[in-house]
Image 1 (tube, rainbow, N blue to C red):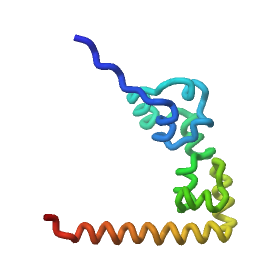
Image 2: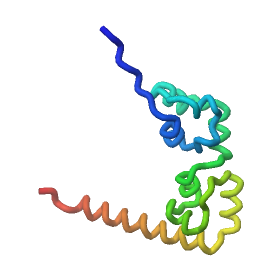
Image 3: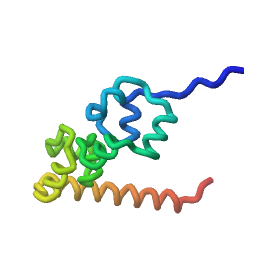
Image 4: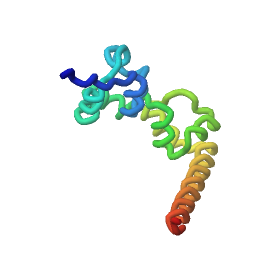
Length: 127
């Protein structure tokens, strides 16, 4: 009986699942496919390079948006098109430019409306 083929994913997919920017990862990570077992091990026991990237960046757009509490579209509207480091994100939060305040307010309104719609859907009888 043959053993099942090991599931693998492209390095880009693995980096997204790990929440890091692929371009900032070591070449030995970027240059190959990653098995599901390797990904699980990286998540459970992150090596120094992964811990450093998660802590200091540069961070992918989704992570920058999450840390700034705005949408990825809001980042684009604010002119943030490049990955940012943790230090750059903190500087933006300290500076709190007008676009960031506006995008945070918009993002909060959208999230509140989504929550309201979820509650309303949960109250609807299913039939």
